[in-house]
Image (cartoon, rainbow, N blue to C red; front, top):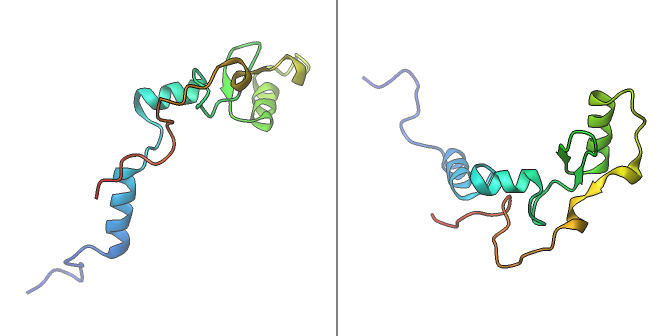
Length: 104
């Protein structure tokens, strides 16, 4: 007797999802921390809040953060720190958030 309508083999979709999860960098670990914090030019965090030093990837996200966390202070776009303009890009380091290894 077989199992109760359980598939005995993995589907192509399931195998492809596992390969994608194993080979794509999702931004975790030390490389992801540097990416999220905006320490390097390759990071996604472009803007830094002048009040609490939290980082955000774009202007809209920073405005949402500012409205939620600093409602009494008026939002001034000119006071934001552009981390991509401050840090110099180093091309020798791999950029996180892009394709990881291509192992199969």
